[in-house]
Length: 109
Ligand SMILES: [Ca+2]
Ligand SMILES: [Ca+2]
Image (tube, rainbow, N blue to C red; front, side, top):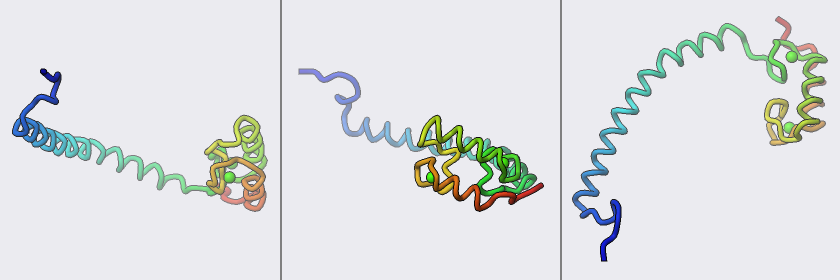
């Protein structure tokens, strides 16, 4: 009985394939790392240009009524929005609203 595909390969052939795959992955990883380097530098530059504002749902740099509105929208659309899940417990609920209200007015530009 013949088996199909790569399952019928001798052990030596399978090991050779694995070795080749390791070399290929190593080269590929280096290329990806090299390509990421300028992107990471640019990303860090962008992040440094605008300091983060915790609890700012709409990312406008201040915690205010717009964030409460957005929280309401996300809360109504789905209770599991990660966008307005301020305390990151997996749910968008009144606990998140309480945090927004506690931080109201913070992070003005
Ligand atoms: Ca905001
Ligand atoms: Ca939450």
